[in-house]
Image (cartoon, rainbow, N blue to C red; front, top):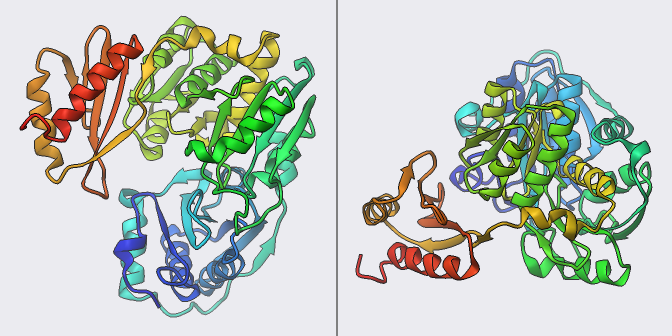
Length: 450
C-alpha cells in the first residue's frame, strides 16, 4: 500500500496517481475511516469514468460497509450530481474523481450530509489520522450496498433554475471532453429548446481527444472551431467531473469567470430581489458593481470553495461565484454546479434576444491579467516588501495582500502547497494593466533588487 499520505491528502480532497500513490487497499481504508468519522448510517458514493474508478469505488463501498455503514451507489456521476444526492438524501458523500487531472490520476472528494464541505480543517485531517493509525477491525454487522439512479431527479432540479417555457431556441456547442459532462449535459439540454452540438460526449477515462481541463486555452480549440462552424449562440466547456464550466461567445471569444459570475448574479437577483451575492476577491470590480446595480448586496470572500460555502451559510446568500469557474447556489445546498450556471446563463441569453457578446458588452469594463505564478521562497517576506512599496494604496489582508487604487488593483497571495506567489491584477485600460502588472511582477520576482 502506498504510504506517503502527504502527497495525496490535499487541502480539500485526496488525489494522486494510481496505483503509485493511490490503490484499492488505501482507498478501502479511507472509505472506512470516512464512514466511521461521519457517524452516519448511510453514505452516498459516485464515480467518474476513469479506468481505475470501478475498482476504487468498490473499495470505498467495501471499506464503508465493513464499518456497518450502508452505501447508496450512484454509479457513474458528475460531482454536482453527487452533491445533489448528498443534499436531497441528507447523507454524507464521496465522489471518486480527479477532476481535470490526467488519466493516470484519481481522487476522492468528501462532503457531509446536505453537501456540507469537508476539508483539511473540517474533518480531512481526522480521516487521515485514522488511516495512519490503522483502521479499526470490521464491525459486527456489515452495511449493504444499494444502487440508485438519481439522474432524472437531478435534471428536474437543474431545470428549476430557468423558465423553460420562456426560452427562445438557441444553438449550443458543448465540449464535455469525454468526461462526466457527457452524462448530465445532454440529459438537461434535451429538456430545453436548444439545438445541441456535443463534442466528445463518450465517457472515456483515457480522455483521447484532449485533457478535460478547459482552463487551458489549448483545450478549447475544438470548441471554438465548432462554435464558428455551426454559428452557435454560445459554447460551453466542462471539466472532467463537470462541476466547472467555461463559456465562449458566438465569436469564439473567451468569457471570463468574473463575467459569468456577474451574469448569473443578475439571473439570481431577478429571482430573489435584494439578495446577497458572494464573490471571491479575485473577481473583477465588475462583479460587485453589477450586483449593486441590480439591487443586490455583494459579499467579498477569500478564494476557495470552503470559504465561499461558509460565508453563504452565514449570510444566507443566494449565489456565489469564483473567477475559476466554480458557481455555488443556495438552492443547490450551497454546492457548486457548472451545469446550473450554464442553464442560468442560457436563460439570460434567451431573454436578451441578442448575441451573447452584446449581452456581455456592458460587463466588459476592465482589463485583467489572469493569474500569474512566480516561484518565491519567502512568500510572506516578499508580500511585506510589496505592501511597503504600495503604502499609498488601500490595502487589506483578507487573502494575501490586496491593494486598490482608483484605476487599478492587484492581489498577491501565497500558494498553500508550493513556493509560489500568485498575482491577479485589473485596470481600467489594457495599457495601464500591462504597465502595472510588469511593475508588480518586478517586485515579486526581485528584479528591482528587492
